[in-house]
Length: 94
Image 1 (cartoon, rainbow, N blue to C red):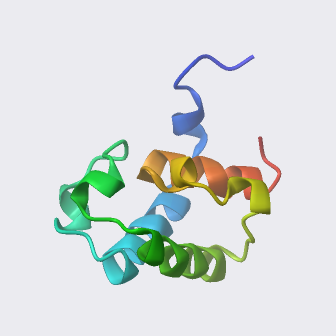
Image 2: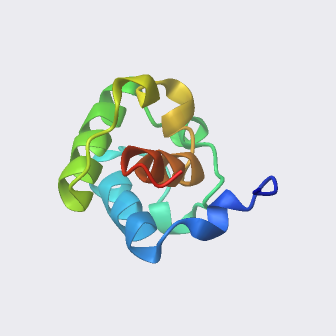
Image 3: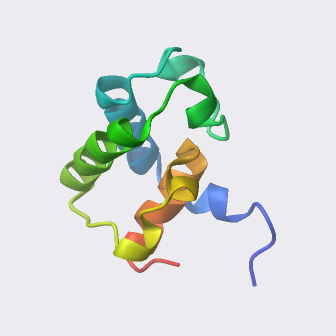
């Protein structure tokens, strides 16, 4: 059984790097991605619904995954942590 917050430690470095690269390239954020923590609220730094589509496509391409329809919601794209969790769910790892 996992403890609350333990999920974060399971995410791979490569997943988070791909997420950060996608956000840097397509996120249109008003702060550099390097200044954000993994739990920073992406919408608070300018992330938009339009940008989420481009970021999602870049992550799917980079990591060879496809986000299932049930993960296509605002909470999935709220932070790097939530995106990393969605990547693992997309792989069936959770």
